[in-house]
Image (cartoon, rainbow, N blue to C red; front, side, top):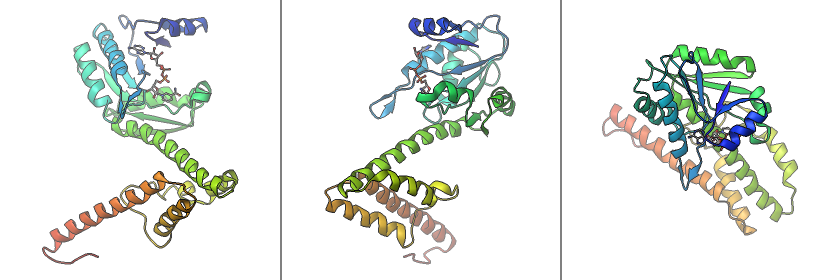
Length: 279
Ligand SMILES: NC(=O)c1ccc[n+]([C@@H]2O[C@H](COP(=O)([O-])OP(=O)(O)OC[C@H]3O[C@@H](n4cnc5c(N)ncnc54)[C@H](O)[C@@H]3O)[C@@H](O)[C@H]2O)c1
């Protein structure tokens, strides 16, 4: 395995650990290989900053131009959905003067490493996601990575794998903010959040039932969830605690109810023009 990094300091650190690390990618004379893009994708305000990612991808494209082999470029960075078949494909094609699927192959393999235990998580992943339009590329990448263990999930659309990684991080961030918002209320109420949160982690169906709350397109309803979300907002307000996340939960549900109602009305209107009125 060869590591490529423009940072001389990073290259030296890797070399000091006995690893093959270089500042330039040279594919001339290399047989078919997997090229993993682990370039940085920070954010600038409310957007991803893909400038370093694009520059690194262009360098890979230029290296592909000098190689007769058919390499597989694997996007491992966390990127907005659509990047592999959009930006990566066009930058590689432009700089390699080759066509994706012919001169080189494209795939996605988002990583789930935790910063605190990155090396251990790399050696023993609990899940591996592999994506490509080309089934042979999926099979080859899955064969390369399956010896590491963990559950293998494959996708034929790289954007779905990219969405998995974004949603994975956003889910974790949302859960952390949810419990921090609850912690603010519990603290005002003089209660210890930790035993409450660990109990709810096991009692709440949303945590333990894979069918509950993880399918899109269905707002919550019934007697309890609308009552307790709105009622708890008022309870927190009595202690002067604002709950922006919980307010957004209610608003998101209200909006989805309106979307679903409009879509049902449109279906009914097509079936029975000028017909039934929905409550
Ligand atoms: N750190 C994590 O735990 C983690 C986990 C999952 C996913 N990711 C994702 O992986 C990607 C990389 O994250 P990271 O934490 O390893 O970033 P990092 O900043 O630690 O490493 C990125 C490396 O890319 C190098 N680089 C920048 N431009 C380059 C170029 N043009 N050519 C070659 N090398 C270049 C930098 O010098 C740096 O060493 C990001 O998309 C991130 O979201 C990170």
